[in-house]
Length: 355
Image (cartoon, rainbow, N blue to C red):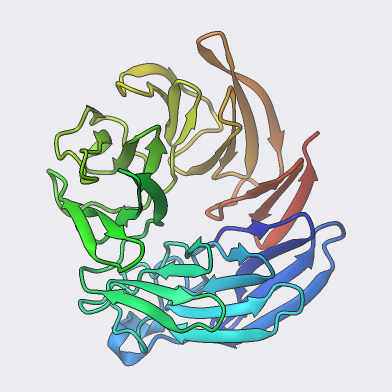
């Protein structure tokens, strides 16, 4: 379920044991696929989590992508287990549990938003009323600040420089918001017109504007006011573009999103520029772009599709099928390091040299 983290030397990913009682994080040699280390621990929801029969929908495997910061990697389980490990050896430096230690509230489908590193600070989202957002010192694991608020979303946070001040921007279970990086204080919030949104796509910075996507409210583009707060009135919106679990990408002057078809929107107006139907596209998938003209689509069926702008038209260039099975269901986000592409299909990690 969780995405892959990779460098030129190491590849880190998470899985579960066969009885589905323990999390397992593996670090592999990027060149050979040889296992460098394995970190395993019991990952069972505490009684406060109120998980029926101890099982989450789609299984109990970690959802969040591991976070590599220098010589360390931060892992996060579906039940809120946080571990800081040595990237080369797998040695444990420190650990917490977002539910037990910070009064977090487990999202219905488990913790999914990936940790965020800002220098030597790690940002986590327990989603508790007293500790909605949390900053941890990377070196020793000690909390720096905790801020009250709402439950956790399934989305990840980003860092933005707004009005000459760094902000943490992200979603909680009900709102979009900005938080002060130094103190954790809530700077602004914005409730969507239609509540109850299943928030998975991460907000995307577009110059000094912010792109937000949701299944109930569609695509919206917001600007920031001089004081650093967001203008609640969207600059542009497209209520028909409703990606479910992936984050759209910006390719030059366009926004690319996947929702059954490949949606190509004008970046500044969100007007539909092009709608691409393709037999290999479905409701789920992952997008990676060079930011200029090309986008890779990793599909739910384990295929890799390359699209490229030719003039003002996005055109399909190549398809690479990575499995002969017709029954695969791919949720894990791939990784791209240089020309190496890493993905997980049916429990097998694949490494490909793209060029």
